[in-house]
Length: 165
Image (cartoon, rainbow, N blue to C red):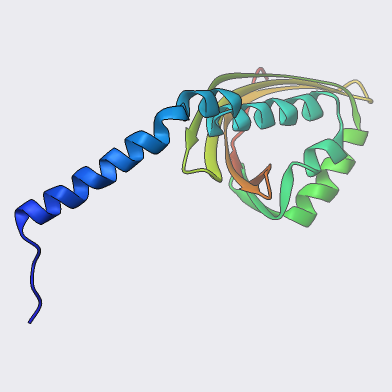
């Protein structure tokens, strides 16, 4: 038969634990630690803008380096794998004269210390080396994962709606 501790005994144990925490924590200021390390949202926001910079610089390898090898993407209803996206990015970027994209309404939701979702609305204006102009807009969602301190995209979803004729 097990004995339950009496209420006063539990109270004494809790009070002792709190007093130890108070004594040991006297020199510890959690706000200093939090101020020194960026939050998950801040870290992912920096990764989002690194992705944007690689995209607009037409740096296919820079984009690919921000994807995990298990990356998959649903783009305009078509599922693509990492090898397809890597090859497609290199081919696509090589055809461009300019790539201007504006990302707005960025929202980042932390799913814990190593995962987050970012979503935004893009507006692209692309000019190919052949002089063809393509303009589109739409929503994009990235699922980010941190491994060994590095944030990369594990999954993405994007839909393109053409502007103009």
